[in-house]
Image 1 (cartoon, protein in one colour):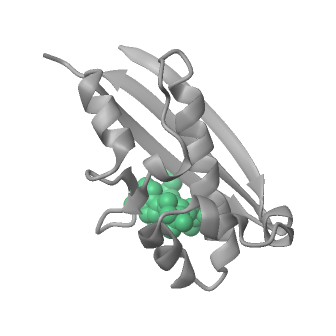
Image 2 (image 1 turned 30 degrees about the vertical axis):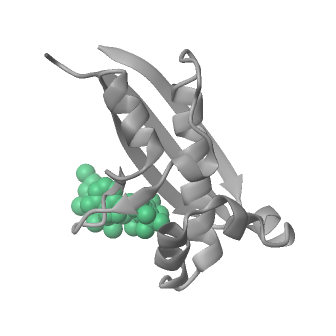
Length: 121
Ligand SMILES: CC(C)(COP(=O)(O)OP(=O)(O)OC[C@H]1O[C@@H](n2cnc3c(N)ncnc32)[C@H](O)[C@@H]1OP(=O)(O)O)[C@@H](O)C(=O)NCCC(=O)NCCS
């Protein structure tokens, strides 16, 4: 059963103008991943959008996770997923939930979506 859905869009140009914001809200691994890309700020914007989206998807729960509690990494095929080691994953596990994350970029905008499900017993 779907328990939450969140969507967010971030303008990379605006993020660029906010000095060191991305460094402050991305984990080290997220930041390093984005730095390997041709347009790092766009990938940072996508990761921030994904974090906001998960925060929205968990809006019905108490003690929601915050920026660095959420770590979005990429699987071997590039698919974005929550790191198994982050607090958000622990929060989801504790509440018998799983989540799926999707990111997209176009021009100077990046979007992130998160869907949260109840785990089957
Ligand atoms: C992987 C793919 C889907 C990415 O799409 P894109 O339009 O090039 O790029 P977008 O900016 O929209 O999305 C990039 C994000 O997609 C995500 N992504 C990458 N590989 C992915 C995969 N295998 N599955 C899901 N998401 C993926 C990543 O989060 C990436 O951002 P990040 O590197 O910052 O984490 C694309 O390169 C691809 O292979 N498309 C196949 C095209 C096709 O066959 N289309 C048929 C449609 S029916």
